[in-house]
Length: 244
Ligand SMILES: NC(=O)c1ccc[n+]([C@@H]2O[C@H](COP(=O)([O-])OP(=O)(O)OC[C@H]3O[C@@H](n4cnc5c(N)ncnc54)[C@H](OP(=O)(O)O)[C@@H]3O)[C@@H](O)[C@H]2O)c1
Image (tube, rainbow, N blue to C red; front, side, top):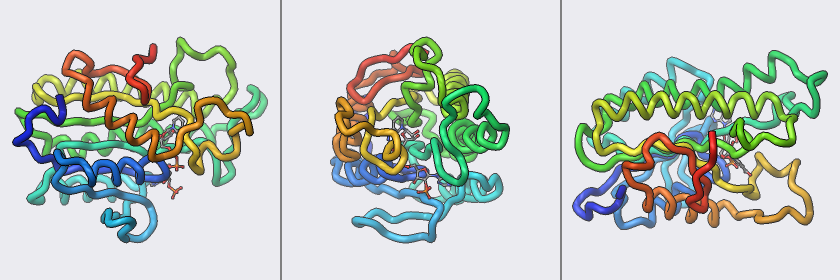
């Protein structure tokens, strides 16, 4: 559906691009339905593999608002947007094994990146979304954010913040549908992917470990096959729906 109208050439944006995000940016740059790709990271503005990167710290509300304003007022208002940042560990944060490990700082830091930043970005960028014609807001969640799928427990901060992400996305989808009839808004699980985020937790015999390129190709295939009936849903990289 996203690429079904061959006359539409999308300007794509990959927000908070790490392992999966960079691979997605590269896959988008090679897609015939994509006119341009811009990515963001929190380092200095740069270029990687031909992808221009703008600097954007996702904990900086003013920077997010200014970034959105510049994107929306420019000649290339993005119509294909992936939020790909995520926080699971690092900067003193270790996924909790048990309740005794839970601390407010880790909960709040995870919530900031996994749940708050995508909504602030949607707020900043949505004035540029087309009223008619195909458009996409896709945000990377995680299967462990599914309440129904939670059988193992643990990882409180990540699970809680991804569940909040999912509710934010579902609420956003309902509001966007009122103004942007052809826009598809979905949450995506990228699979277990060999990136910095999963590195400390992968087992040597990890089943179904994807490369960032494999995950990006599968995610692009999945969003290309989704229709407006799937708006507001949660899907894995292989196209399978995930219960909330
Ligand atoms: N990899 C997996 O197995 C897996 C599984 C399920 C879901 N996911 C989800 O998939 C998405 C992509 O993850 P990934 O595997 O590509 O991980 P990744 O390589 O670690 O990428 C995550 C990105 O988020 C960025 N980020 C974190 N805090 C930021 C901030 N304050 N400002 C700007 N950027 C910030 C990181 O930047 P820095 O490099 O500067 O820290 C990094 O580039 C995440 O939402 C993750 O939760 C991944």
